[in-house]
Length: 191
Image 1: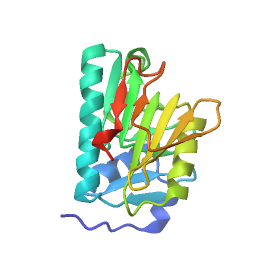
Image 2: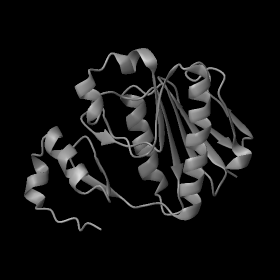
Image 3: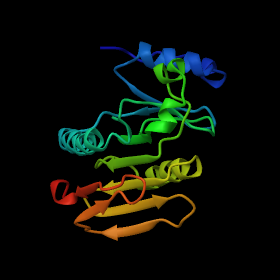
């Protein structure tokens, strides 16, 4: 077990490499940085949310293995967004050609790329307004399709590039549209 012991003055001017090293040193913590460089410590999820995250990741993994259209990632993966933030969506996916355009060195750390698709599954302790700002940040940085799933209220917000947010109440399925062709998420497993 690690204790997060930081000098706050060091965080203000931390380089990308220093932040990556910090995340490796304190691997027990899920850390993100916003575009202003503020450190965000993400609490671990409870058992229910962790299980649902696993199920969601499995669904995407099976689809991706069958289609071979891109590369999928779990919630432990950090991405360096164009605005400078380092974020870790619960589930994310990048088209194969975009992923392969990165150098092997870029792939080792926090890849400097915004995923094509992101999914955030809210847990009971998450703040909706904070999650919505994060989803808007993904959208502004190039995400083509994003889903914010609020399991407890059965509400889904769909974020699409250049469009207003669509809100669905108690949908039975979500479609991957043209970003994840043929993908259908059965939400009965989540509700």
